[in-house]
Amino acid sequence: MRNPARLFGALSRRASVATVAGAAVALVGAGTATAAVTATSHAPVSHAVHTTSKTGKASHLRVVTAAATTSPQAQPAAQPQSWQQIQQAVAQQTSPGEPAAANQLTPVGTTGAQNTMPISGPQLANATTIVQQALAKHMGVRSAVIAVATAMQESELQNISYGTSDSLGLFQQQAVDGWGTAQQIMNPAYSADAFLGALQQYQASNPGWATQPLWANAQAVQKSGYPTAYAQWESQAAQLVQQIVTQVK
Image (cartoon, rainbow, N blue to C red):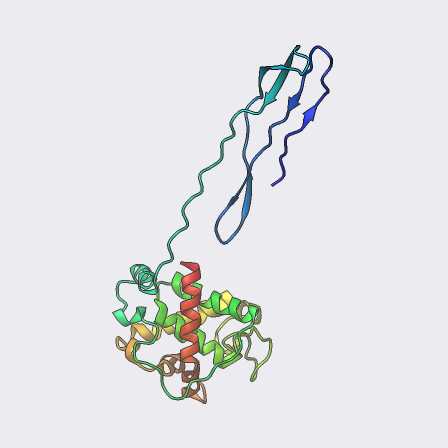
């Protein structure tokens, strides 16, 4: 690091005055986001230093130095939580009437062969919206997995403006079936909340829903001609939900 001090003036025969400027100190905070914090200093302090030249004549060197600087103490980085700890935190926010399996990603394992798809930024954003809506409704991570897998099958997690008949959006909902207006359905938060609300109604009337296959829950809401097709996305949906919940908690 370069020395920021500067020396001003020149020595004369009898006396000289020199000024040394103190430097501010920049502190870089540690963490995922890096920020520079400049320390503040108080008014300079002047004092005289007596020296002797080669000729034996006294010289007076007046030095101006910055007062001691202060810097904020770096905060220790937060320790990452395990998935079990995060799961427990979500469980505490889940509705009391939900079964314990409501806070398990795959309580009964997967059904049939599993498939995967590449996930882009917009697709991940849509999945995040779905998970956030499930948590806001206190439904637990299992319902989030069901909802994400359903949207993966219906639209590949894309907010599309087309589909069979007048089907639209992430869940391919139809205005004619009472899901809302076309404008509402094309709002990811609205369509996710609508799906989860219908899923919640099904779950309320089926106490064993959490130990049923994923596709049975999805089909109860979607009424698809291919009911078991939702099952193929369960493993990837569970991974996405875990990733998202870990980031938002």
